[in-house]
Image (cartoon, rainbow, N blue to C red; front, side, top):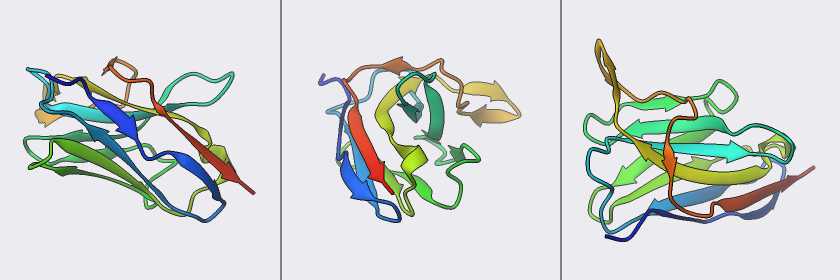
Length: 128
């Protein structure tokens, strides 16, 4: 099993787009939630988007709704984060993590920092 690895970061001007990838040969067992998180210097890690890989439900932080889209490629065991209309405040190290789903009325994927992170992350820098 190859642990999930992030890629796709870079430097863009405000208003630009990037697509991040979280790829693996097989996601860890008991994993149904894949989450993208980011951490800017001097700030805590925050959840950006999450995906339940079985039911396809997606979850977004208010700060990225309408701009970011999380999706999956079943054939390649890859989860993407399409980021549009990027802003300087989106600048951060982005990481993907995994965790089992939370349950209540159905299963869902929280954006709390309770995921296991496997890779080094990928840097996104947005200039004004």
